[in-house]
Length: 277
Ligand code: MG
Image (cartoon, rainbow, N blue to C red; front, side, top):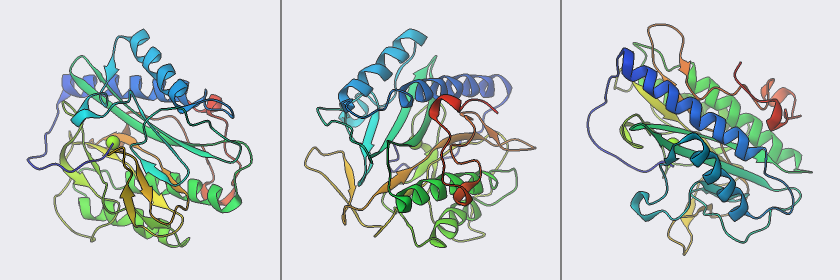
């Protein structure tokens, strides 16, 4: 989920960072378990319930359920749906792309991450969209370093996907994360190089490229939540929570890559093979 916020950027130290890592790993584990259950013939409500069961089994709860009135345990969004889809009677079909976004709260800390599952025979252009989106997430993560400018990180997402002719969604953005689901700063998927703030060790960002095959224009459906691409072309979403350190970016929701070679090889690794690298 990415909605707008305002305030200061929290910095977390040793024991708090351990809590963030724990919540992030839990969100990652639940995301992988849930995404592995996405298949032709399943309803999105079934997938939502599976995620809720995984949360209960680990003693955590959904960070999305009830957030500003959101009615689902997770966000599940298909094809032209960008983000914030709600589980229901819709049946997953061959050729669909299914975005699963999981946010949990554990012991007062938030874990948040997302990926897009290609189901069966997905159009090559759409597979390229997925690969480019996941690749753009990792390009952005490489900027999540002490002393770097947030503007460079944001700019890098749009810069990466635009070379394939794809567009980034402007109305919804990544965010700081920790005690609350949405903390400062906002992390748009576009920006100006060199723009402040300067990133510091101890900041935690939810970086989440939302990338459209066609136009970047979106609108919200009558349910008040589901965001769709106005031209109804496919949209892709990948998200990680990243803790900025004095060294390498710490991807606390690390699961390895679905497309290890980015857009050079469009054969995705099965969800069951994704795990910590
Ligand atoms: Mg998020």
